[in-house]
Length: 73
Image 1: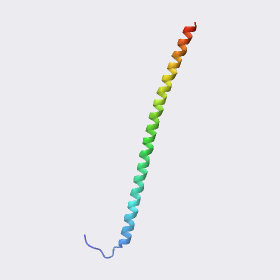
Image 2: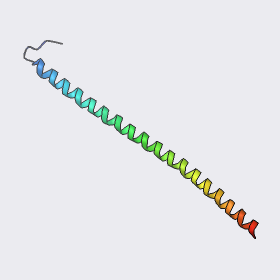
Image 3: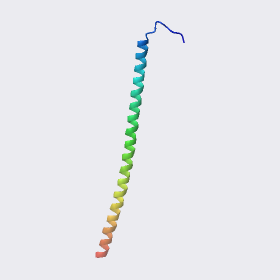
Image 4: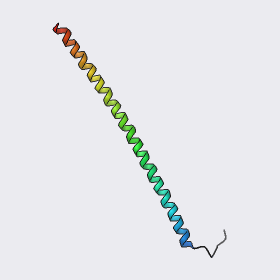
């Protein structure tokens, strides 16, 4: 590569810095989106587990209630 004396190295460095800053901000945004997506998946999984155990508890309570009703009659 030939050295071009008319190139303002300060401007080139400034452009490089701006490009690097843009790249880094994109990386940060992508990282934040991945974190949000993962947190949402974990929340949905937790809610599914809670729903499962709540349903199981309600079924057991209904079974107990039905069993009590049969004993009393």
